[in-house]
Image 1 (cartoon, rainbow, N blue to C red):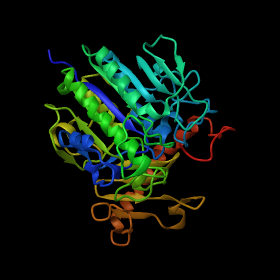
Image 2: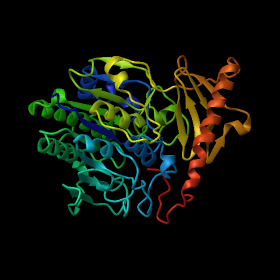
Image 3: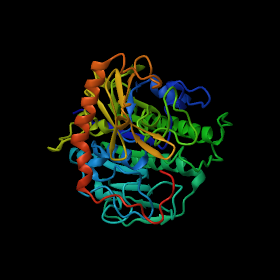
Image 4: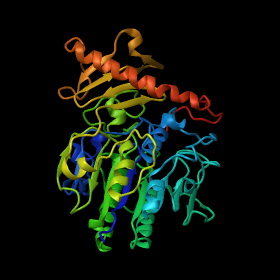
Length: 427
């Protein structure tokens, strides 16, 4: 009987599309990630499901837009008491009945008080990490090796967070090497504060930001070598992506704007690499529309797990990854908080919200929605609604359908109220 595939999903925090060599970066050196892409599949049109942390992570874990779970607005702060609904479908809840051991290593940020805490509430067997971002206080590291084990608390070694998270991942892999496993390795890097590891200094030309990205790359190489040493390389699909675009530093590549930037590509378009020798083809590049929402149905399909009768926003990408099939998406919807900001199809993108100074502008209200031809203008510089009025009308109708479907879902949850200790910036 063939072994079920193992899954390790590495989620960087605030890594830009243009930070990796395989995606066109030239300043930061990422030889291990570039090799991973050469040995696997790289998706060029892969989107985070939100342009900031909490809603993007909710989308990845559940296969549903965060607005369905009351987490679409901004990010959770230390004083917040809300979180992912405890009955939410999650990747570990889908995989556990199929015989998988499951772990979250790294950053959670989907609720840090009961009933939303600890992450084992959502189907993880083990948790080793932080309740939220490492620039938030109070902060401690928490560890539990079993769903019913008490959490232990320890100080945070900021310089060695990345190193320790990868080591903890390999420890879990070794412990569960005889059974299928799923690990969500949710890094804190390269989110600020930037704390280069003195054990792994590379002398990056991109300064402290480059150092922490190159440390991620070094540890990806070590993880893949560790899988080879355990004889698990061909049994394990390793995925690498980011929760959103870059913040104050980092590169969005050819795309406009950055993390939190309303509808623009730079906040949503993120790296995606998947590698499993013998199962996924080497060196394949695909422009198929795809999203982190797709991870839940994709892993379920590859594991032979049964999906319950729940409406997902994600789609199964296994055909895209294995056989270069076309995208299962006709369109991707992009949110800015709880509002539809844009819709992307294979060729076109229709933008209806942006920021100007302190204003969140509804462009349609100003009679100025923007249609972009992503094939010829991926930087979203020149609107072409004047040249393609029929396309503009079709895209406008797509936006209106998305608004009618999703935006009323926000009313199913209490209105967002910023906690007293909330910071002035999104995380």
